[in-house]
Image (cartoon, rainbow over all chains, first blue to last red; front, top):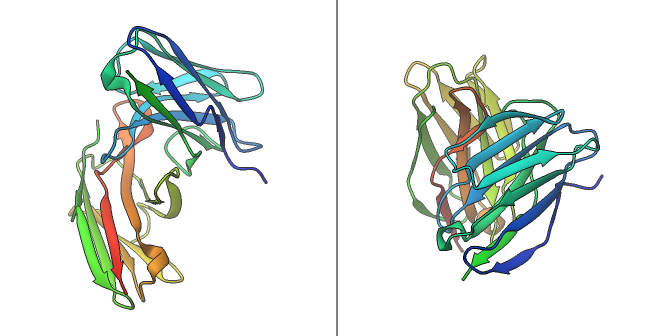
Length: 113
Length: 113
């Protein structure tokens, strides 16, 4: 079975621009979570979606938004990019809501210049 | 929300020896504790997890122990091999109504040949 897939792999943007990152969960999984991982740190929770409903939000500004589609894939959008948004953005899928059994994709490396 | 502390930040062991990584958590309501392994350029990989109704879980060379009273849990790797070299993260439910995970800062495990 295919694991979690994310696109694009790498992305370079300029300050002030907008970015959209995409994630496809493991087949049969209905929950998608997004995390930001800065170099040398653990992943930080941004959002979780289950059955297209937001199930929690971490301590991130409103510039970050997400949505989940009927096929359970998800998009993370970040507006008005700042240099500090440079990070690895990870998507994790799970068969159920909550923190249990989250399986991560390879991530999207975002660089803001 | 949950706070997870992880020690040590770097651990160097001889091949064949055992490695132990320790984490503490703050929310006594937390009931699920996963461990992830992250290799360079990849997303975190779930390697073992434990729920609060058991004190220990083993899977071949890895084991996790949980002490609910002291609010700490540990990862034990026996007979370490070169392929065990990676960054290891512990995590716990984010809490505060957010259905995600809070991660520790990671332990860089180095296996010396």
